[in-house]
Image 1 (tube, rainbow, N blue to C red):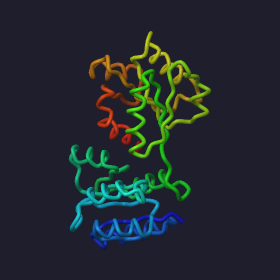
Image 2: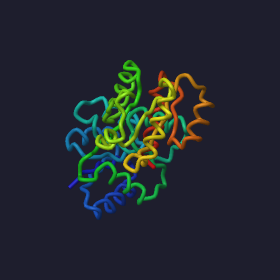
Image 3: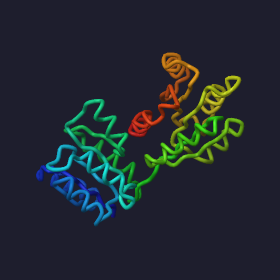
Length: 247
């Protein structure tokens, strides 16, 4: 039985979530402050945490940051459940370790879908991202950033890309550099999207040599899931990647 910690200062709301999740077979713990949430997370090691942001005492995002800095609790998925919805705050949440952001009042079915995505068998699972890039230094930077946010990473130099290899590795998302020589990046994109075994994998385009406007137009033309203009700003792209996994 997967264990979920609900950090919510409104006890009525917390009990309602507990009852509904218990009916789905989850064991539910409740904490009413950020401090108690951190303590219970360390003591009980839940499989997932639902964190309100506006809490008495320590703020929910600060509590999340502390949990992510602790080796014992850093890998526990944390969902933000909050009335706050400014773009800057949402971006900060994703950058500081929140994996799903839901604004109150939220649809319980949407919450349940996200919980089941992270706890399909009662254990948290990591999304697997394949990087197709011919620059080893960039691959190293992107790999470090992705792993810091809990993703599994596969790197693949462009000369080794074959549809069968991609299918066998089963990535959940592909980061594809289209700056590669002789339009090889675009060729790889078209090959992957033509194959029945890889066409459903979301592909995010990356490029340093194109302007953001040119890259946006190319992504729309090809049918890419999204685009990242500058690899040097890759940390700022993490929220984009997490958004894709929420769809």
